[in-house]
Image (cartoon, rainbow, N blue to C red; front, side, top):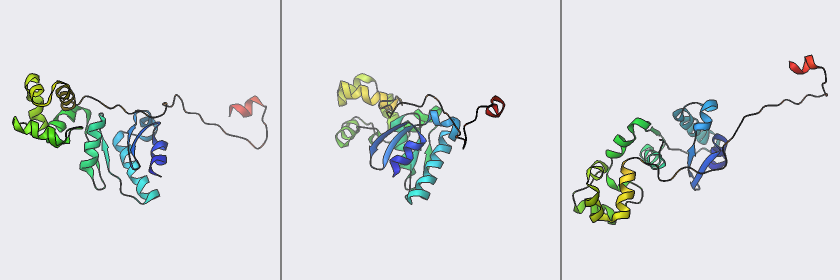
Length: 178
């Protein structure tokens, strides 16, 4: 299944649903390549082995990766480089941010805020009056591209090993060194 395939790519897989997950791939880069290469590998394997379309968002912030994946649908990859995270976020409507539903969109619209860039430019006190102090702090963090949901998963690999079993026991040092 999809999750088994993703768990082969990274030790840090955070399942969100039956067909959606966040992967922390920094440990896989040495063997598999850049994050965008890993994304294309995942898409290809899901297509070849499971005959399913697969959209992948690549970013250093889980929310940004999720948004990128949504924008890459139905079967693409969208990479948001670290340096472009805030610019990418600021280009979006506020409703794209995690936890921003219809009520918050209406509250922000009432004060003329429709984009993430407009949200980020608001004085914190004005935003707090519109959506509450706690929600305002969360929204400002999201608009700044701060990580609010780090990827969990099982413990990261500490090393990689390889072994070879011979048909007969060997004891000669010269043969073993080879």
